[in-house]
Length: 274
Image 1: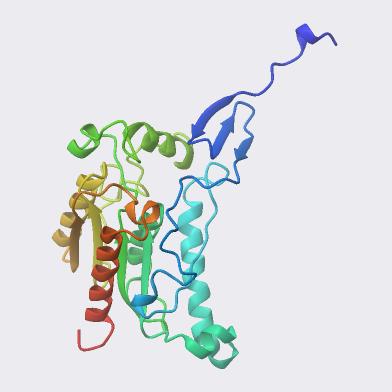
Image 2: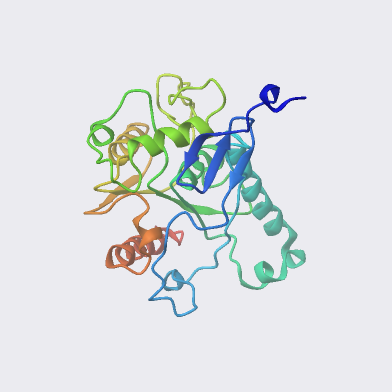
């Protein structure tokens, strides 16, 4: 076959910061390099969240575009059900959990996409749906929510923001089910395509927003809607910061402020007297 009749080579149709690229033939190419540089000057080799005095279980989930929603939500549920199985196993649980974990005092947290997952876990399981695991609260950091109608903070977001509208829309095209809009219930849980929620219990919820995050208005609307439904939700806004600031600048004072906010929330609700 002559070269003139051969198919053209695949080309990039979606590019997420050069880290994830979707090619025209459906191939997904991932870079081993980090998506953003992290200042490690303050790293002493310990865990930055040690001031919380907790044992951290970090759950992974399948990534888009190979695995679009609801894959990540189902993986979040699988992780919590695994934790339930460990609590039921007692002394037969993984040794590091059997020796150190208190399954009666559990907090579920996530940021950005993980914050979205944390919301859906709160609705699905609430404080008592994983017995004998007792979830004392949900900590939702700058959750990835959206919608077809733009909010003011989305429209006014500068193009040079870490998460700007163009990047956010690209993420949506890659993670939402094919043919879905930004009003899909998993992405806009109280939007026009979402069913009217039935009765559900969440326990205490902390929502953290950032003043310069294009999703700030989404977070405020989410907290307000949860309160309308009678849920005990606290909304805290970190001034002067962008989306995911604690990941790009983990040793900054605003990141330290966030840790203190989370610690205060956990201290308030870790006991039955709260």
